[in-house]
Image (tube, rainbow, N blue to C red):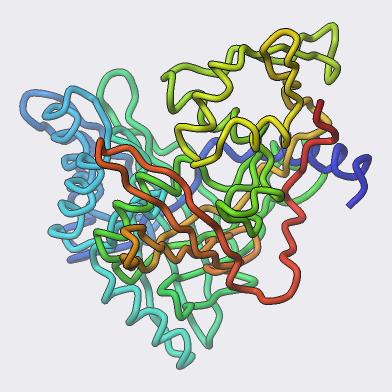
Amino acid sequence: MTKKYRSILLAVTALSVLASEACGKKLPDHGDQATAAAVFQETVAEMNGERILAEPAKDSAELLPADRIYRIFYEEAKKTGASYDLKTTERMVASLGKNGYAAVDSGNQVNMEGADQVLEFCKMADSKKASELTVIVVDGWDAFTAYDLETQDGDIRITRTCHQMDESGNFQRESRVSYPASFWQYTEEGYLLLEGSYFSEEEFALTLSDGQEHIALRVQPLDEQCREWNRQYILPVGYGENNLFLSNWSENDYEELDFYDLFDVFYPCLYEQPVPFTVVEEEGTGTSYQIPENIWEQVIMTYFDIDRENLRSKTAYLPEVSAYEYRPRGIDEAEYPEIPYPEVVSCAENQDGTVALTVNAVYPYENTSRSFSHKTVIRILEDGSFQYVSNEIISPKEELNIWWHSDRLENP
C-alpha cells in the first residue's frame, strides 16, 4: 500500500469511525411474549423510587422485557457509584446470564454467559433451520448493545440496537439498524464472527459508502490464568504503533525491534503520564528532542535485559550531551484504525523460570479469530516487575501480512 493511498484511506476511515460511533445493535425476545408485551405497554417502570423509562414497542420484534436489563444496569450503577472496571463487567454479564440472556462484554474480556444459546443458534443456522437469538453486549455501566439474530435457510439477519442511560437515569434507544449477514462463521478458536453492511444517511454523507460492521463474539470460555497474563503483559502493549509482537527477536538479537516506538509504549507505563515529547505543529514530522540518557535508559532497560552499549548502538545516542535523539511519530506514520487485538490462549513455565505465552491476534475486520499467532516469553523478577525475553511468530509460517501497520518513516 503506498503512503499516499494509506493517507487517503486513513482520512476516509476516520470519517467512517466518527459516523459509526453512535452505536447500534439490537435486542430480541427472551421469555414469555405476553409478559413482554405487558412490560412494554407499561412504558414507565418504578425502581427503588427512581423512574426508569422503557420504550414502547413499535412492532412485535421489539416485545422484549427490556426493563429487566435496565434494572441490572441501574442497580449496578447505584452499587458502584457509576464506576466501571473488570469486576463490574463480570457482575453485569453474570446478572444478564441469570436472567436468561446470552451476554458478553464489548472487549471479549470476560467469559460469555448463555454460550449454549449461541452454539444452538449456530447449529440451527448450519442445518438451515429457523432460529432466533439475542446477545447482549455490555458497553459500560450505563450502556448496552443488543444483537438480534434470525436465521432461515442458512441465512442470518442481524438487527443491532444501542441503549444508553441519560443524565436522569433513564435508558434511551439511541440507534437501530437491520441488515443481512454477508458472512458468518463459528471458528475453532470459539468465536462467532459476523459481517454485513447497511445504509446510513449520516455515514453515506461522510464516506459515500454503506456502513460496514464486523462482529466478533467470544463464545467459548478462556482459562482465567491466560486472561490474567494477557491483561498484565500483552494487552497493554498490543499491536498498535509498535512491533514488539509483530517481529521475531530475542535477547541475543534485538535487531528487529524499534526502540523509539517502545519508548512511546513504556514511558506512560513507568511514569504514569503521557509521553511529553510530542510533535510541534509548526515543525510537523521534523520535531526532534534530546532525551536525557537516564530517562531513556530507565524506560527501555526496565522492560528489557539490554546493556547500555547495545542500546546506544541501536539508537541515536549523542555522547556529547549524554542524551538520545528522539523524533515522535507524525501524521504520515498513522496506522489503519482497525487493528487486531491479542488474546493469550495458553501458557507454560520454562525450566529457566521464564513463562511462554501463546497468543492469537483476533482481527474482526478481517473476519478471523486468528490472524496470526506468536509466542512471547517473559521473565518475572523477584520484586514483581518483569521483562520481555523474546517473541516468535509461529503462524503463518510465510511472511506476515500486517498491511494495517505503519513503521516509522525514519529514525534519528
